[in-house]
Image 1 (cartoon, rainbow, N blue to C red):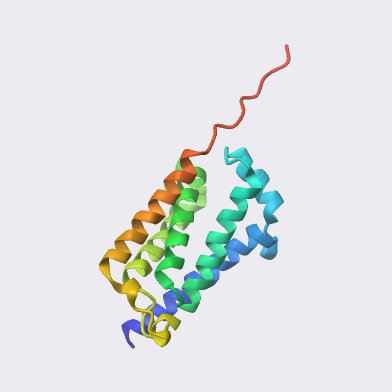
Image 2 (cartoon, helix red, strand yellow):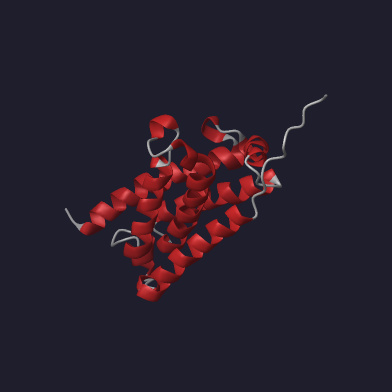
Length: 171
């Protein structure tokens, strides 16, 4: 076995799972709620307009996962996944602790860790990047730049989130 084989396995498993996760948001596939349902959920978290944020999150996960799975522009796709996982971890899961059993950050943490590793390593020898000779992402400054971009994009999304409207009681 080789590093290229290991990266292929990680890319295929993470990429397909993340694409399916994004497809739940975008298209309502695999038991998902689609843009309208996901948008309503995100509105409840303070992301307004919810449908816009659902589309952005779904596109980051779906397209990012596809790129990762194919090994095409792998670090760019992985950066999209990393950004989405930071937002999910902070806005949905952090309050519940670490473990997935209590809806904690464990799952976005693991997806984010895999995405971070793929930003740094690239897609490996069995990727479309390798077959097409796409090598500029392998330079350290590109990896660092993509990591910074993913973090800044996530922080920007979290910064525009509003507190859910306070419920008033009728007296």
